[in-house]
Amino acid sequence: GYGVMNLLMTATPLAMQMCSHPFSDAALVLEWHVIGMFAPSFFTGALIKRFGVLNIMFTGVLLMFGCVAFALNGSDVMHFLGALFALGVGWNFMFIGGTTLLTEAYRPEEKNRVQGANDFLVFLTMATSSFSSGALVTSSGWEILNFGALPFLVIVSGLATLGALFAGLIAMSRGNTDNVERARGSNKLMWWRVRLQFLTLIFILLWWATKP
Image 1 (cartoon, one colour):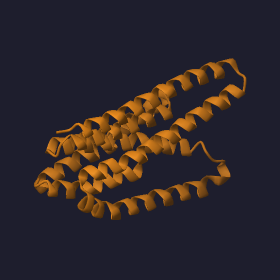
Image 2: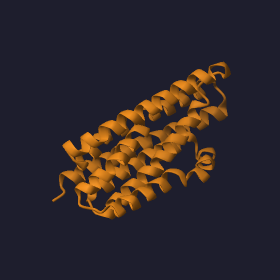
Image 3: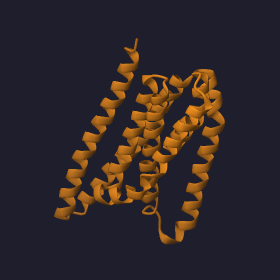
């Protein structure tokens, strides 16, 4: 999620310049992108507590799919603005959700090593995506760059789905009635999320294929 966000964000000013938009428009788009990245932080924690961390992460993936849909819909300023705002909010949900899961994935004595490894991977991903975004957008174009983000979003969605499935199976294996009922409800919701994301991906591809 972080890599997709950084790849599209850093490529946006170049893409807007290629579409003959002035610097002031690119600045406006990036301003709204930053608002989308950080403004939801005031309530993302409350949403995670109410709806569950995986549900919020799935919502973030859907918003990133929405970013790609906006970007492929045209090259006007509002298309860029809508795409980058959705990208920012989607990143916020995925990043805060991911770091929430990270704090539950290690023992206290492993804290320093795990968080250090996580930071290293995050900044390595940022550096790689930053250095490659300019070359990709100038050589392949804005549309191809957005299509290239889709496989990564599918992978993230698949990993989150597997995480939800394993969590449900573990809860059911414990035999507690309340845990079993919650796990069954979570698994049903998970498959609805999978269907929704699959249909979203198909819609994006079909829309682009039939675009005049």
